[in-house]
Amino acid sequence: MVRATLYMKVKQGRGDAFVEAWRGIADEVRRADGNVRQALSRDPEDPDSFVVTSDWTTRDAFGAFERSPEQDELTAPLREL
View 1 (cartoon, rainbow, N blue to C red):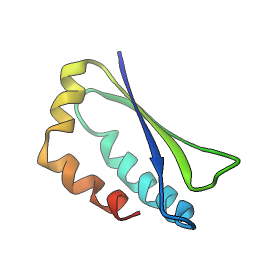
View 2: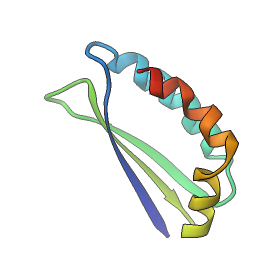
View 3: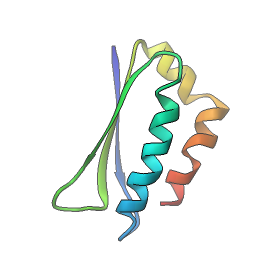
View 4: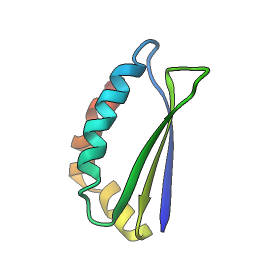
């Protein structure tokens, strides 16, 4: 298994919007070939800081998703935050 970890700092005051956007995206990513699970952790001392973890069956499965046009389209709303 492979775990991808992403540290995210969103624009001030946009933490709740990030959580909502991430939930919808995570539901879609869970359907990707090789995805095992997604998790989101929020820093209790900084509500605009997050850790996203994504577990995959193999490095190749994760890489295929990361390079896919679907990934770019799916995660676009997060880049706005």
